[in-house]
Length: 286
Ligand SMILES: NC(=O)c1ccc[n+]([C@@H]2O[C@H](COP(=O)([O-])OP(=O)(O)OC[C@H]3O[C@@H](n4cnc5c(N)ncnc54)[C@H](OP(=O)(O)O)[C@@H]3O)[C@@H](O)[C@H]2O)c1
Image 1 (cartoon, protein in one colour):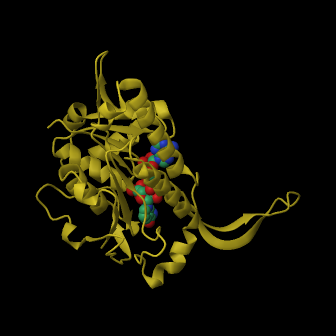
Image 2 (image 1 turned 180 degrees about the vertical axis):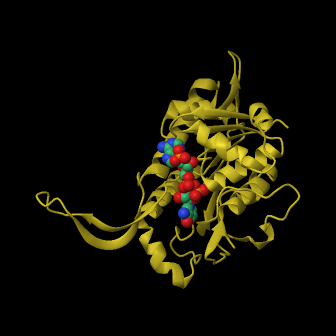
Image 3 (image 1 turned 30 degrees about the vertical axis):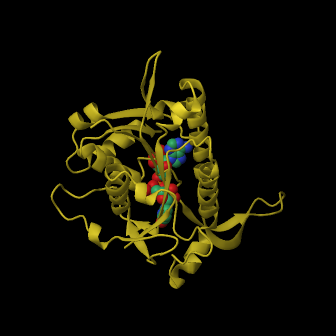
């Protein structure tokens, strides 16, 4: 199997599950991680994965997903003076862990106290998905320019990109239950960031002659639950419970397990190639 997949944000539950299914099935992967030990500990807790599998099929690039050089290292499988081999797929689950915040700093600099505000979810870096997507596109642009004789040589092998966004992002798409509307309103900060990530990739897809990605698949899960743990080999993961919608035919649901999101990306994009989902905003819920 010659496919190599790049993973960003694989210490998050969704991308970790996808990486685990991929490695267990014999794919090669390169994963960018800020803390490699956190990634290997999570992967070794996955059913069916061993140190031997990680040593044979996984390369970890330590660093930050906002750093273009680090991302470039994650996308290049091998190179010599004559040619560069790239990953064929990129799966990104980059995000920030949110915290419910009920206060904000006093608008008056002289008063060092926090005052009540509308409850909302705050994340340490409210621009993380925008910044990491900018770095990803920057890395692809530099690879195209510096490693390939012509843009068409690059375009022939440009990796397909799958990103994890969220339900409730797109105006006019009915993918959020009425009961959860107040909760989604509190997610304004991460949602603005995800919208910006989607816009950057949509802008990329609108270009005709210099496409940096071999197609983009946007995954929009409802509220995430559970962790990274995938099913034991040969057991039922509950995959049949997963409902799959699109912007034209949305599915409305409350929550979805992280491991099921990873399994969908593995089955549909890694194994299935993802042609059917390119250009879609895929709504996943249980
Ligand atoms: N929570 C929800 O209900 C919900 C609903 C829909 C969509 N989503 C989105 O779905 C995606 C996947 O969620 P998840 O729960 O599986 O993962 P997650 O826990 O949000 O993990 C985020 C990942 O991004 C990485 N990351 C953050 N900043 C980074 C940086 N500067 N450089 C490199 N890596 C960085 C984290 O690495 P570290 O381990 O180093 O921190 C981690 O691997 C996220 O974008 C999330 O916002 C969430």
